[in-house]
Image 1 (cartoon, one colour):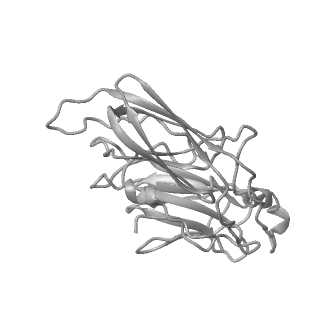
Image 2: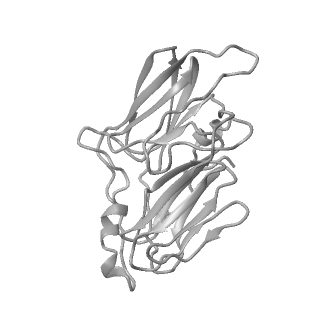
Length: 275
């Protein structure tokens, strides 16, 4: 069983009162975000940029045991290495798959919903950490030759559909929360992805180089919240000055308690959410 995932950062990110819209997309690096004026009654503040990197230090936790079995085992062996390594850090410590959220900003009034794409390939969900904004549409597409049956739970009703190769299905994301995507076919127990839906668009997932960037941030003081599925949460204050770039480096270390998971099974705990 994977240890509980708390995500205070999702809760803290709920400064934006009325949810809508979208960010850079689950599989894509952070894109430029224009937050607009802070308040209608005040003059627009100058804007700056936040540029940062997530770093892992220490000895990575051991790979989790993943058993690829069942009728599609011969076609799905590539999924073993993909799911066994849960902390992905480069030689220089660059840490990917970290959700990054800015606290203290509100969504722009003109921010438009968009599609968030997830691919099924080599019997795995790609990416494993998917982020979206309320009002977006999740689009899952199967690139495998075998049938998949993705399940995306919800607080009210779940989404489940059978996917043949080349098929895709849209699924609206009407509410914020943390959800665990699985394949409920019964023969792909190892498949999972974390889906995190936030009420505003000021979030990103770190790239393979551990980097993230937000531009067009109004001058002021904020808090940056980061969450990794295995390494937990980090919070760092930062300030933005008009016309300047603020640089940050956030360090993650091995969690104090090693997570455990039954061989061949997706994590049983839901990703964190605002409830």
